[in-house]
Length: 443
Image (cartoon, rainbow, N blue to C red; front, side):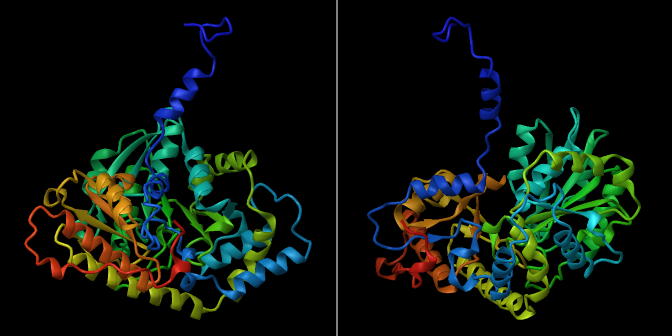
């Protein structure tokens, strides 16, 4: 078949088809799709319980010390040049010192690579471990950014299950079965996104021992590191690096509530030198040498950001999230077609089980979310965008009053679509306006 210019086909046609096949409904894509389905005539502000960006709400504004650090770095005129591929030395040293507070050994600046947010940390790490036959173990539910890049890079993905009845712990028996001689790594997200769980010290140690037995490294996604507010204390996976090598991925984005600054890192937790011996360190360096670097003046601000941010700032954020987690968990319990296996103990999300059979005209989680956005101006992410059909991912990191309004509208929506409408219509809860219009996205 000619393309109109006398050629049988375009040379890039197959590549474009491959990219299309690799497309995955990630939470970001789902959020954009749902925003497109909002009713623009609804006078009520939108309540976004889908976007993982807490900066939409004033209560999550970053520390003044962090803002001052960026201004100081910018005005110093010392950070207007290109950055070295691995990041500037002061930033790498500050991140290493920051991580060392929780480790039984010491990282050096040479163990840290600065990236454009945690997203680039993911792509660099997967690129570095990729090979024509490699497969990686990913959690389900999880962050589908891993799946999207792995598909684009043609890395085989094998999913292990997180067990809701066991507080979303890893099904380690299944991990043993999934792995083979081509498995190179297992990804652990802790605190959990999207489950809101925090792995215990004992469970993390078992994960490390399992990975060592299988001969694979651990990729520890700790972008929500230290954002824990339940009974389980956050423990970095790097604590177990003497058992198995660990690549820790982190960022300023969530803990300092500055996702738009796009500053992340990869930390090499490898006291036994295994990653160096096996070529992974050289591979990471090679990938970064042909990649873009984070904005230099943001890197220049890192030492001051880490040094000058007071504990009060973090405790205030934790307090708000603890209150929000309670509101979310208790609110979901009041909606008959939904259930939450456990109260979130960390991060900013909760996984909620949806029973579409109790609803009229709604067949699955995606249809639920589209109609909820259209009818109630509330955005939540369908479970299919995190690997779990007929579940919902609810972001509770917002103003408590706004969260309550969103849950009230969800409750009203479910009552209106219920197959068995036994309630007195007068009892149907009235959906109000978001009390913080600045904290809700514009429609």
